[in-house]
Length: 124
Image (cartoon, rainbow, N blue to C red; front, side):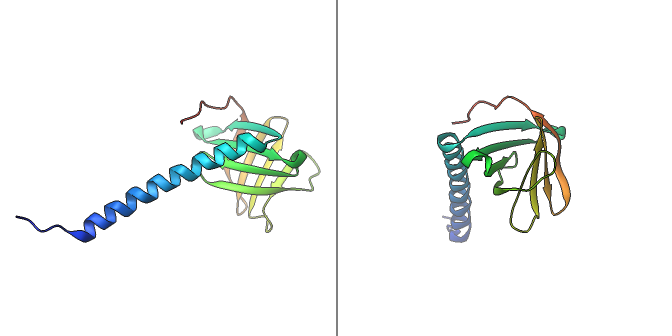
């Protein structure tokens, strides 16, 4: 009879747990967004990427959910044109104007040419 490799079993268990937990947190974010939101926009970007922008407190803050499942809470910042939301050091910025949007990380545009689209159906 073969020996059970406990390290392999423990590794598999940990990976399954982390996968389950990350899916749970993702759904928790979606539920929060739908309960308290002032407005929800869904942007479809070039390259098939998406941005879900959930505005709170009369547009003073926004919760961003990117198609790669990263989540950012940003505050409204002064802008000459359109609405600009950023974190405290401006390393993460979301711009929107007239239905168009873009997302910047450390000065680089990572989600570009984004236009308002239909929110996809829930995956629950």
